[in-house]
Length: 256
Image (cartoon, rainbow, N blue to C red; front, side):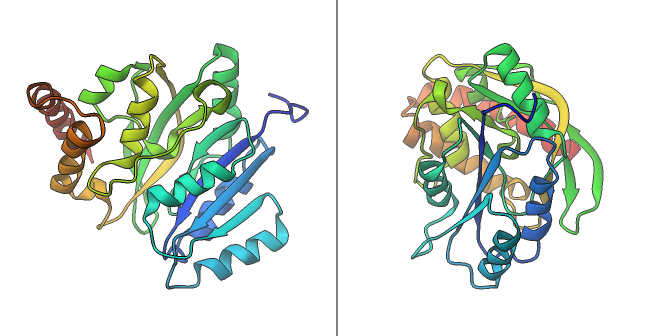
């Protein structure tokens, strides 16, 4: 996809006390081979100097935008603020401690445009909290529908790209007892849209000690609550999906 393309990507990045990692995260965006992007950073009342760091980055790159929330509201509300402000045709998600490889946007956009896709995601690697890359790379399935996703939360948020023209205006559910990003993917797929996997390692997920992926019980509880409170799935079906989710999660975490 050439730089003459008028397609633009809006990058959705919530921040909270991200001073330790945000420069590296922004750097991975600035190194993208596709350059027609805006990075919308929404700070959720950080107590450190995250905002000052972002403002300094803005001085040298006007593609970076900053929204400061007035009260701490959680990452879903921060993402929703960024989504509402996004001007690009495509949305991409990148949390404040994760990284992209340089060809992430270019390759994923080409994949989506070539195949006329509304929703895509990619393979990603795990790194430790201190930034050391591990040998663990999550290979994603080539296609996911609504019922398949209910049984297997294989989509890494840092890899997702959505075509706004096809999915319309989207917002994450604001129930903190639920998995907000998982809830958004389900809401899109419930309309008959499918998500397609690009089997290229294009992102790096930082696994910290207090991350949701490190707390398996909390993650499982949020998944269950998403079934019951967001998707309103009946008890019998929820138990079926949760049993499948648990098996797949055990397989996934045994590698990580």
